Image (cartoon, rainbow, N blue to C red; front, side, top):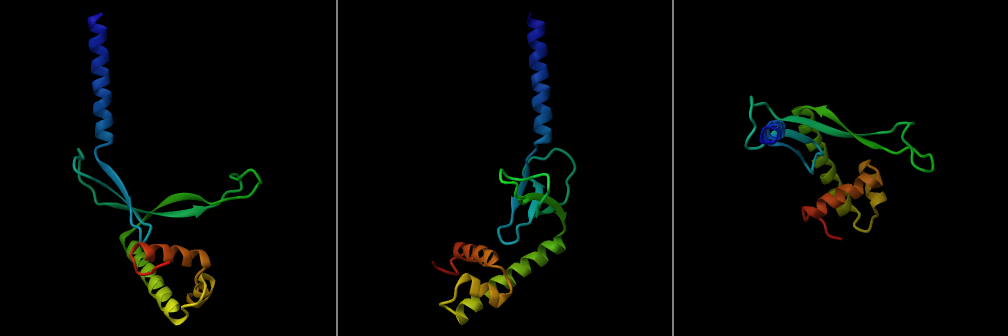
Length: 141
């Protein structure tokens, strides 16, 4: 019986080693300003080093995925990205924040819809930008 137990312990130990190798500290983190997700390792990757890989989320709809009422809805999909597009997205996001702040200064009594029209963005995008600016303490409620 001892031989079977030793074999089970060895198999479990090997499985743990495999999981540890595969899980060797890989991390994903999302930039709040751009939405770009970066894959890299942290601390203890066993194997060759690699450059961080960047991804972006896109919302896609499929006629095969519907809610109970038959309405399509967006499903997030991660697509590969590159450093240049990440920088461009960050710059675009900063430009949108700046334009929104300028629109708010020009029309302090305006609504999110008014500010969105002024900067050429949707009310939903304005709302998201305002939430990000609140976190950075650039705006108050």
